[in-house]
Amino acid sequence: MSAAATLAPAGLPGISPDVYGPADFEAVAAIVHADAGIVLPQGKAMLVYSRLAPLVRTTGSMTFAAYIERIRQDPAERLRAVSALTTNHTYFYREAHHFLHFAEQVRPQLLARLNAGQPVRLWSAGCSSGEETWSLVLTLLGEDRITGKHIAARNLRVLASDIAAHALERANAATYPVGDLKDVPAVLRDLWTRSDSETATIEREARAMVRFRTLNLLGDWPMQRRFDTIFCRNVMIYFDQPTKERLVARFAEALVPGGHLYIGHSERVTGPAAALLSPVGPTIYRRKSA
Image 1: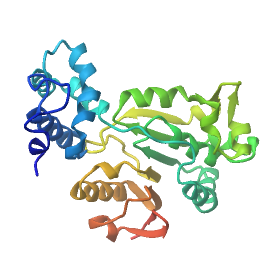
Image 2 (image 1 turned 60 degrees about the vertical axis):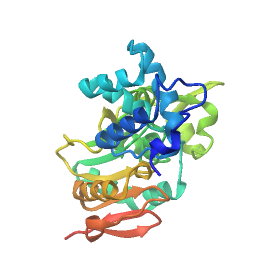
Image 3 (image 1 turned 90 degrees about the horizontal axis):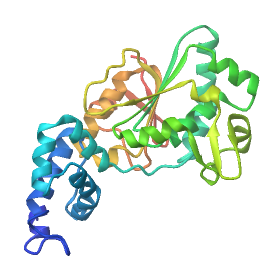
Image 4 (image 1 turned 30 degrees about the vertical axis):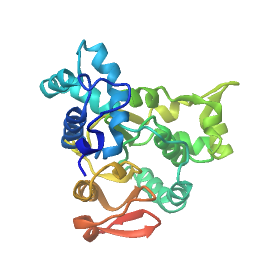
């Protein structure tokens, strides 16, 4: 059954079909899939309306059809629309076993490389509002302030990217309600955040390590160095299978030999990347050396 059949003949309750109808939903779904790989199933018609209606109004478009024509012609407005339709649900230390593995198995290797004067690069891909990124950074800095400061001063950079500018703004601000950090190990929270009764902010040393960038994972990647670790979790659940396989293959190619890829609990490595990545834990993969 098509999306049009789902909405027809009555459309959506309370919404004039002259303003928003089945053809508009199908057009938006096609644009979002082509631009960002996101699949909007048939039941998302109301979500599309609620997320895009403010943009329709602020651009002075009288109908969704007029707004759709606008985003076809205007790449900046199209990015705003795609960003509005992304889901930014995340939290600190989500899938905590990933950070435990990183702390115990990966961090010692990275510290050895840093101490030898070698560069280390990490990537939080699809970082949303930053909770994953800061969980990773705090885990890397560790439980000793002196050691953590030495780490931060080395040739170390963390790229945090997302397609949604509004999510990146919050991530870069690095300030959250105190309760949002409840799952952060207490020693890391005490060392690398400062808080009052209502909010907690990531400390300056940690913030200086991270570069936040707007990036469409399906577009060009300007990064020249390969990464030692890539986190991309609960992003690919919105993609179809061919898109997932192409993206994971690109991640595999972007890792140094021996580098690690962490993906979401419901995601799997299939397709060409399976020849390059070995599973080393639940949804944790290591780039083969050859």
